[in-house]
Length: 201
Image (cartoon, one colour):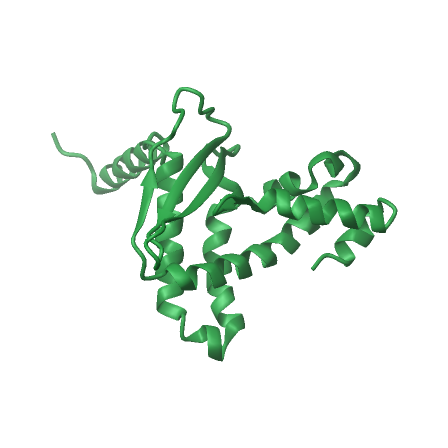
């Protein structure tokens, strides 16, 4: 039995789309590993720009982070109990501010580890991991022989994709650190969120 060429093409396109829609999604660990591998490759290939054209260097890092980080979710973590007082526009604005902060944090930090061996640990409590939020632990082999731990707080978004919304480095929770700064600015500026964002550094 022969199919007309157009019919065959249409059938192949349907099967490809159907298969893509039902492809197995990446796990949280797979996503974190892909993010770190992509970031390390980006940083490694452009590290000479760090000294000569830092904006170009950070632009490349930011492009990678945009694929793996939900900056509005990061803003929600940092705002914490103040989130209900913020408008969606303020949350989005803060997400973009944190986008710049995290781009510089990741870019500078990964320069140190670009040639280091990296490994991912299995979950300490796999039975307690929830699909909407889980922790992925990664370690770099430190130059002094002591591993440096990164912990990524991941969640499934509306598109069923794992995204990062918080990070801990060597036991320092970035979301909590930023919340402390946010809370202090809220006190300083009389709970005026716009003023807090204007003065965020």
